[in-house]
Image 1 (cartoon, helix red, strand yellow):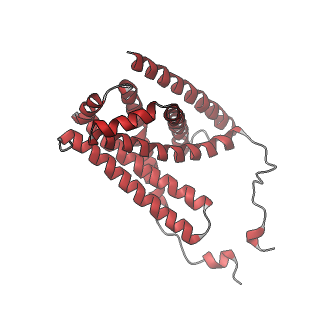
Image 2 (cartoon, rainbow over the protein chains, first blue to last red):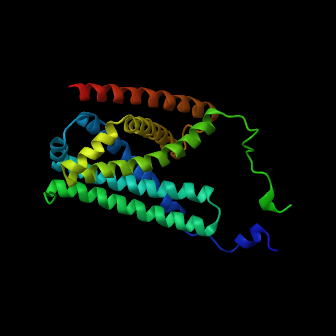
Image 3 (cartoon, each protein chain N blue to C red):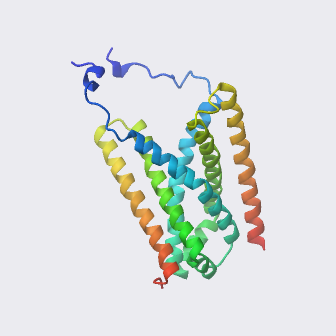
Length: 126
Length: 130
């Protein structure tokens, strides 16, 4: 029969809140130019055939910016989705499970996207 | 009454909708939608790297009416989250937090989202036709 305050007093913070907040902002700032570049690039590619897309992705500048975009996007998504889960899911185990799944999925998708870009840029794809 | 059973504030059934709160929840919704959209980007890149067969599958899907609806929702979410994200970054510097500024900024975000989405799709249609 302890009050919520009584349970929390003395525990202190996890000391990670500021870093989560700060990385969310850094990736947000990075994504402003990256997202605008991406939209313009995609508009120019509308209706392009597979060879034009592969050639474009394989050029150094698009390849580098796409890798940066994928990195910032999935980092930002992992941080944002974690906050959404923590706000709306209150069952501890479900919350923990979802945060882990989101983290792993964001990492896996980022790796898959970056690998695809690099394979076109360096020339190991079929 | 245990503390966990107390009614939540704001009480959503009787609370009046307002621009600020609607834009706030839409920022989250757009963020979640964009996370799903990012998977589409990875699928597109992996398909392009895999070869013409895989790429045609993605291109057919994105060119279908369902794919186009997804892409339109993605564009709208992207520009909304981008514009409102900049609004959030301004707030993070401590500026624009008074009531009037939150409404002016909010309507600017709504207008900016509409204009940018329209420009992107008109440019996209021109690019497709050329």
